[in-house]
Length: 326
Image 1 (spheres, helix red, strand yellow):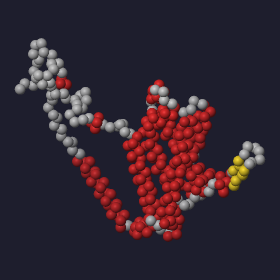
Image 2 (tube, one colour):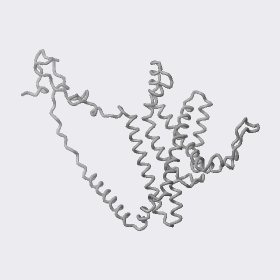
Image 3 (cartoon, helix red, strand yellow):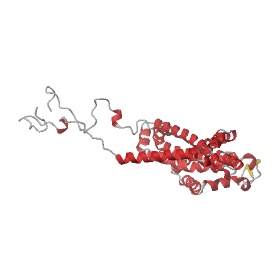
Image 4 (cartoon, helix red, strand yellow):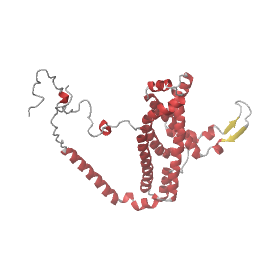
């Protein structure tokens, strides 16, 4: 049977497009990567050697690790660390959204105030800020309620109102809100301006536009860096000793190691708890990204039904002899 791609068309018959001519299936040969396999084997061998060495090295003292891993003092400190993280992130997200809206405001005064806030809290180390919060009772000895420069209606001792735990929460959340503000602002700016204009043309209010159009699209941009900030916050809680607050996980294990004169096993205990919490947070981040990323980033092949052409460059079978003549 002659090849239709090489046989000239009969007089009076239109030529068949090249895309409509059947092609022979490509016989693809998988490219081999022997050195990549060798490198992977070497890495696995190094990892196995490290694990075997760590299992028998006396300095790690695994029996002590097992003894203190579920110690009541350590588990309570782990819960305190989790409370610090959750409370600080909730306040930071709320403040971050407010600051992001202020940064996008057309009012120059509001924008300037938000910019100065971000400049201060992003430009100084979080440890230095926590030290300041630890000294706030010396700077502001009382909290007065009333008209400024007049006799206060009520006055409270600062150290009685804010204990070390809440000072740590305030210090962490104010620092984190500066970073969350930029993340939220980036997410809002990532949504095309035409989306908002189209929503207004449909008669949606500002709140409906934000809730149904802007935020669902902005969340795809906000969630990955926000997840990183949550994990970073969990680890930053180890700095609250600057307040001073010493009931979180790292400080608690450090105190125990000072009693036993054996710091390495307690460092491993703290690391295991941190890894547990970060693993849970990463799983939550994965499902959140999947929830707000629906319909985005899917390959066309995943949505194509069996037998459907792949696209403009797909091979099209020629029409049968009794079909429509092109």
